[in-house]
Image (cartoon, rainbow, N blue to C red; front, side, top):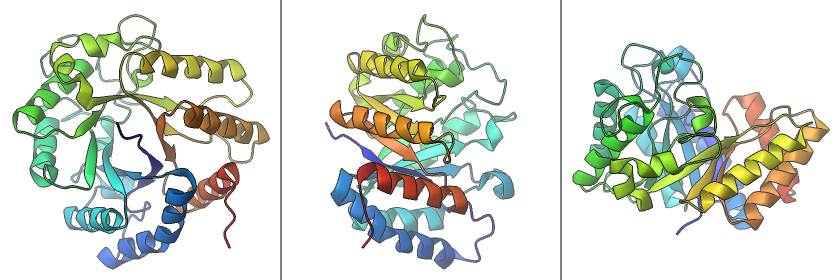
Amino acid sequence: MVTYRGPSINWCFYDTNPDNLRTVLKKWEGELPWLKAMKTKCGWNTVRLCIASPDTNAAQYYGFDQTDLDAIINLLGVNGFKINIDLHNWKGNQQPNPYGSQYWFDFWIKMSDKYIDNKYVVIYEPMNEPDFYSGIDLTPDMIGTPDGVQGSYGWLISKLRERGDNKLVLLPDPWYWQTGVNGYGYGDPQGWMNNQQILQYRTDVLLNTHNYFNPNDMNSINFDKNRLLGWKAVGKIISGEWGFVDYSSADAFTYAKNWYKFLKSNYVGYFFWMSGYPSEYELAKDKWNIIVGYEKL
């Protein structure tokens, strides 16, 4: 089993109005030496490319252009990186056509048509944080049907497998849509694995946590360590998004070093959140270089 490690970056670095494809590619080309240095330094092998549905308001959610995205995937692929396609924003997570709708299913079937044989794309992330902002009811109320988060995933995964698409599917962190400790809550992923359709393909999915904490509260950090290790005993696990809550906080930096050491010592993969906004991206890069002891020559 490959341990996937790498950055989580908006596909166009939040350039809301790129003049042309070269604008986006030039930025990625400029980042390649550093990305390859991280490949050598800390084993980065995968990039989580954050996209939005193409008909989403581009000025707000940065809907992607297929030609541009394909060029970026190829650029990263030929330079030794695999790709996680992360549907990070889906129409702002709002009605109409929310996660789990026919429109959402059709979107992923089209993505499968495009990437089923692409050797660089190894992970699909059909939902990012599906109900954090929307207020839409996505609880797993109808297992095995395209209703609720579990039902939507079970249905989509079964359709992907039926058509011969066996790429890993990243399951969403339940923090964003179902709280508590029963079912698939904070502490128990068994609800996912009991889903009739997901159970059939459980070797092809990744349980996922997003890890952001109050840096002054070590109890919350220890809680998520225990949560992640508990899930590791049930299925394959990844810290699918983690990073800084405050780049100026010494405590936040201590937490980040602590969490990185924990992931590394427990052989858990991760995607380090770097946003893509120019100012935040550069801050995240600087902090990461310190965490892993990388000094640019």
